[in-house]
Image (cartoon, rainbow, N blue to C red):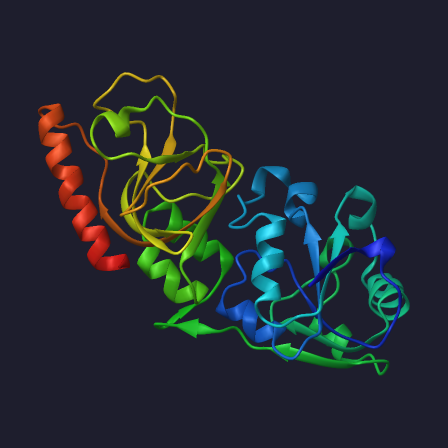
Length: 288
């Protein structure tokens, strides 16, 4: 899939889905269905309009692009959202971006989509425009709850990754470069690939999780390792089950499947090692 900054886009007949699409959840997928182009914003508009209210994103832009590509979309056009763009009036957004720049013949949005200066533009403005066909998608419900990025952020931050998966339509994922740790896991007989979490993004709550690491079963600990004085802050440590090899410098993808337990201090290192063995077997059963 091609990723194009808005100024580099050239007009052509496009079926455009418009939105922030953070997380690319099942509601977003309903909006994107049938589109050949996704128009999105980077950073999240609230990061410019009201920084104090801006949420931590679920996905980096490159991860969002990968998730959109998996839906068969040909192109993702990215609006570099800044203070100047925030002042663009809603009719100007339609005229200059959707029609003139992109050549949209079809425009798909969610029912709650707002746009333009002070969010003055709404779906009625799009539906009234005869230059393209507007498709307004109703909000999607899962398990009796409306699917939203904000709700998913809360679930992930609370460690409820199984519940989040139902709303995302896939496991919540974290990607990061494997860095060198203190070698503690290897000393204990359970070597780990270590990632430093990006604090600008949402991450699961501290604890132990069953996951897949690049598709392989893994037991993942997120936390500060209270058994040892490390002073390193929160680290994501993934024991990739039945894997031998060097992952340093590799970007690892972790798909979180189930929270197994919280992080806690054990009575001894031996007790910790015994618990890790149980965690690994449980993770194997979930992810294997």
